[in-house]
Image (cartoon, rainbow over all chains, first blue to last red; front, side):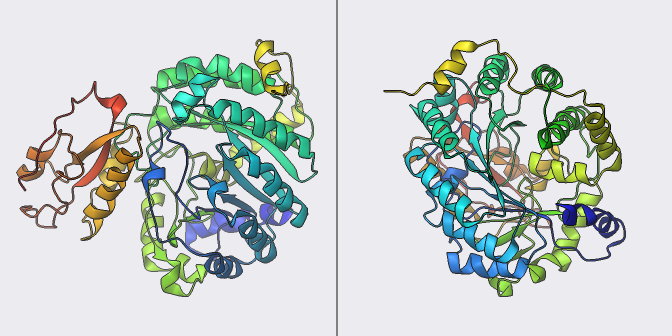
Length: 380
Length: 102
């Protein structure tokens, strides 16, 4: 982590002056777009690609070396990938990242906990964050995710992962706030906080080329989103987080405030480092600075799986210039957290909040005790 | 327009395989009982009469005009794009199945 923080000034120099050349510290990979959800807010599951094999991914990770601190294994549904354990192990072997983050829809709950346990035990020096998607309570979740019975599987998956009780496993809950659930967030937050996850993250539903949602009305109005996110901030600020959670939740509060500003101002409120500090590698080997624009700067198959050759080329420079010129703006969480790390005023606000200790009380009383009981009581 | 930049971003010349790739995807989405009703065209330019005439309609994948549109007269070539039409958007633009004549 300290090594990653030490590189922050170098990324700032790189973005401003084009020197020194830096590989990204935040890498998202999407080994396959296949997904067994049918979400109202995402169309990636319709895609079929000529996917990189495990052997090809291994070469890519080898070329990345130890620079990336944060990996996200995305999808589609990551656990539909039969090689997900081996993929994580390959990342660990070559890159030794601080964090490997994996979202899941929980539908394959029977195989998820055993695979997570294997990953955690065989990659002991990396922290695994497993984020379980939750977009509503009960049938509302099933409706938005397009699969009957998904909510029940979410609960079973959450409980199975909790029972692992591994030191390098963080269990998070992740909600996408869309036009389909923005009116129900109180119920959603009650339930999610009642679960007492290690982290609770929300992200606004947004148009992305990757998800084939460009032109579709899934994003809530900024007025409704503002009300929802104010409620979330209020809950976070009223809780008393301890240790590292105090830092991460301070970042989250800053992120939610940033999203409101981006929606209101419709511009990059702080400089975006997608293309410098964060990147995505798509299933077919395409390298993208970010998944919202999905600009293909090179295909790793064409450059002998050498990420450096894909990352340092004129097309990547062209996209970086476009991002730097603020030709785009978005509240993508993955990139935004990296951007906040590179933004001294945001860091100062996070630091102040952490030092003041004015934060938050995780696991505080919830309004909806019944929901909590449902989530933690074993089912027959 | 909050997301106008992204719509403009996808308006660039497409390769020859673009239409098949996207329409196959939508075909699969409909077959697999997704919330997709069909495809709509995001016109590449306000100045392209052909594109404008094809916009604001929902096409079944088998009937959708092929992008790049053959009759396109834009100097830089056709810059139209497909976007999926979802069931929950029907109140915005009624489904109108049209057989492509392009």
